[in-house]
Image (cartoon, rainbow, N blue to C red):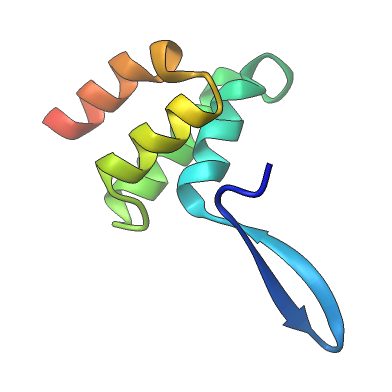
Length: 80
């Protein structure tokens, strides 16, 4: 999957850099391994830091197939 992935040149080495919205969606995707609290903190930090828009978060939630899981949290964060 190449959605949300950029290639950056770092000291002559090519490194994959993931977008903030994709990282948040991945946190929800792997919430059983890293913990729901980590996923929620990532969402809060991304939203309050204005590092991702609601449209971007929703788009990657659908791509990563966690839209139903993220929906209530996105609604709560968007309403706050």
